[in-house]
Length: 346
Image 1 (cartoon, rainbow, N blue to C red):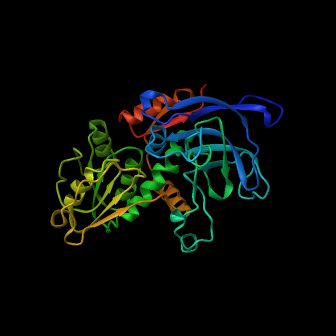
Image 2: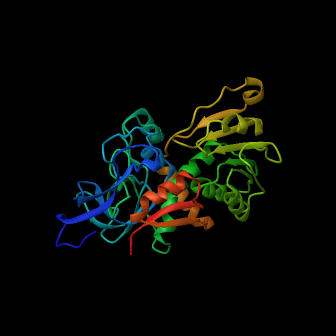
Image 3: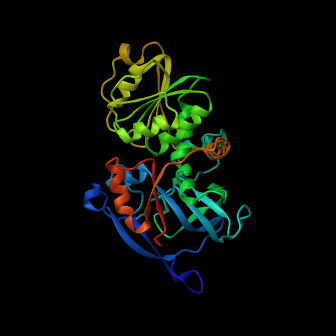
């Protein structure tokens, strides 16, 4: 943020907003400069130390997800320092490190919220979709949906945990992987390389199927038992599988690779059309097909505790904030190793 005597119009922040959704090559991101906002009741103003670049940001920029508001700043894997806190905030103080994630708000009173399924709340709101996110020098985050973060790890290493990690963790749980089971992972980007480590730490056998040769190398380096092409067959039947690639054509491929009573969890918010399924080949013998929708705050807390306990390894490709369009283009072209992360320019 530019220096000034106070917040509001005395300071201006730089960032990027989705102005004209369309293919990355069309330049959907536009550089913006805006007044630094004042935190309202229950809000934190964060000076952004790092923000992960998620595939959901790409879907929003390219128009796969319809914008909820015009000229929105994307980014929902936000690591920052608290600059100011609004009325009623008690969990965080100025100078604390906090994380802003995808889930931004829920009603708290619907049947889903009251039964521990706030990820399905019809009134849920999301960072970088319903409100400006972290592709900027500063961001507002509701304190009730923020996560305390440690000081002993770099901001770039922490950022991917806040969506890629949390969603991957929920997808792993949705896959109903039995103890010591055989897990197939289709696509191996930011979320997959974190979920794989949780599964391995819990004693699973992991087989990775992805089109990227570099991603296959990373998978083997992290401990996967095999790594092959996305449309190939794993070396043994799978108890569970997670589809991270937003490619509907892979749904029948993954279902066919499941053993009897196996479960496929589809982790993305967007998926290309799924081809027709054959009941006998893809679903018979009680194979299960599940979707994954957002996450609960409990998922977030559990995953961050797990990541700290197992010493999760985060592979990042950092980009200066000024090169956000390049980071998005590299993500679209599968040129990113691990997770792309925006960091402040020098």
